[in-house]
Image 1 (cartoon, rainbow, N blue to C red):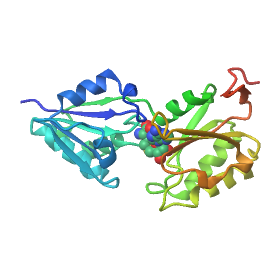
Image 2: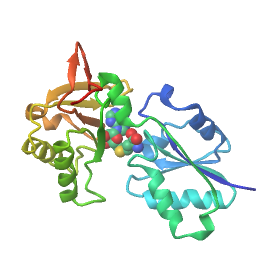
Image 3: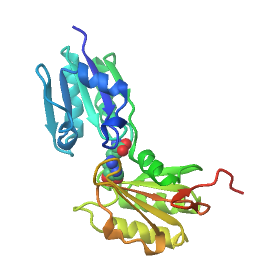
Length: 244
Ligand code: SAH
């Protein structure tokens, strides 16, 4: 039997934001692997094995999915949002790289709606001009690199989407990130805190960088620092298409 591995994105939370392609892969799976809260979104059924694991076990999870596919199973590894954005797709290819026997496996990445796009859509069009995305977690990179990228992105006047802004183990990083942005002269830019987008707990707040309350942000929040040209249109925010 020929096995397969699909690395899929479940979107930001609302089931209506799961693509039909991903739903089909989930329906066809023999095994679904992922971080416990994401696997909890999958309904159990006969013939399906659910493998929930901890956040920090990404490489082991990737290898487990590859082994299931190599044995002939239809493995699906789930991520929230998009699997290629600070998520499992990179971990799978890292596991594949040094293992030639896995190079010809039937592997596909099925995209999902990433948090920054879902958040931007709720507030208007803050990503309508040039933008970038930065992961504020320093688990896998030095904090000095995060500060450098924040500073340069601010100077380049990108809108900046910030993922993983603040966790219990990193309570102070986000306040420090706001300080870096202020030092780079962005204190009067608009900033959006978009929490639990597309879920019943959704909460969207808009501040200026200079007076944004860092403690309002947690791991369920996606932050968008708007570019300097971003304007309000009633309750909406948008980045004008034309910038001189
Ligand atoms: N692969 C995911 C990102 C994983 S990193 C994606 O493409 O969206 C996890 C971070 O994503 C969280 O800390 C938060 O910053 C953001 N995030 C994920 N889902 C979110 C949601 N529904 N609302 C707001 N932020 C979300």
